[in-house]
Length: 109
Image 1: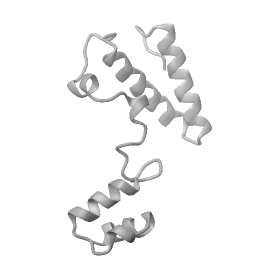
Image 2: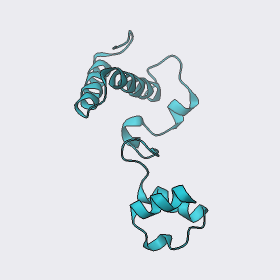
Image 3: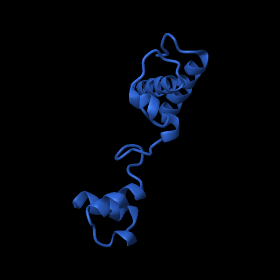
Image 4: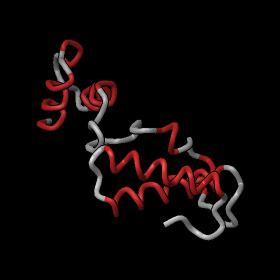
């Protein structure tokens, strides 16, 4: 799926991301799409693309972000994210809860 206009570096980056995702068990089509989106965002942030969305250029890079914003995918929410949600929902006893307990309490609240 390497696209026209990609440099050799971006093609290597695409293959590296795609292969890594496939090694982790992602289906090939999903791995291709994630890799292409990641490379295109990196290109936009580096000023290599003709058009770019505001979020592509002003957000942190996809490679750096990792799973920071995930909620249910790739390991779910972090304990800090769950704690913040529990705080917003005024969950009692949240400070002494484990991650699993926080997740259950937040989902039940």
